[in-house]
Length: 292
Image 1 (cartoon, rainbow, N blue to C red):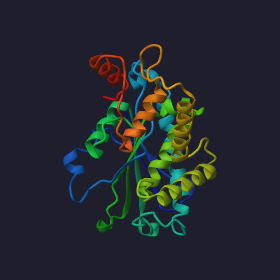
Image 2: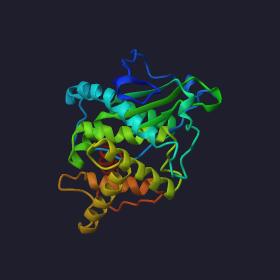
Image 3: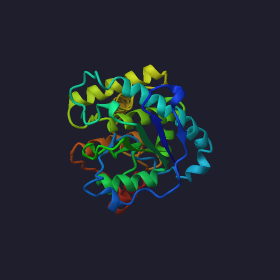
Image 4: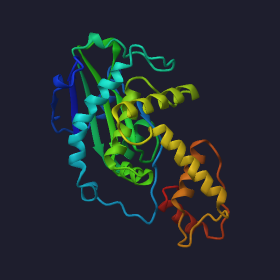
């Protein structure tokens, strides 16, 4: 895991941005995070939840030796992103954003923490805080408590799984850095009060802001919400063109079928599987695709 904090003075000039490494320490304990004063809001976009049962999951450091370089680039990218996002807050036309963060002139500084981790770590967080037992790509954890009126705006934490980001980057045809930037944009917007989960209008407004920020910064790729739509559409097209076979020639559930099943289950659809396999054999197949 790599963790660092980004701080910047309120003066939004690139020459005045100061960065410093965060002291290495464990993730905040549940007892602190669950307190009434420091209550946290968690958000996630549910993409990249599973992997093929035939793929072993190596240690993150062995697979992604470039992660240190990515982390160093994020130290520069995060203040740029915050500056661009903050510039549009005061005259934002969006109606669904929580505006508890609005008067930036009242803060002496701003702090954001970014945690890069693996699938196992983010899955544990997702289970503990959202009662969702699967790995995801990004989680946002707000530290802002308006009632405290602190001199520093404590935005909170953005937690990104490098393993999931790498898979999504490969699927979408861009680099790991591009994908992590996209996830960072999504996470920051949640911390600034956007929430695609509350309504269709909120989803459309957050999607628009994602695209606007990526374009203004010249970063590659589509916003995370649009990318999720594209993945779902491609999966649906694949299913419509298939012959309905559930398992492939190796008696495994394909990534596309597993993704479609996860999406159906997340929407409350009851799934019944008719198969010639025995029950124990089918359960074993489902376990490998994280569908038990």
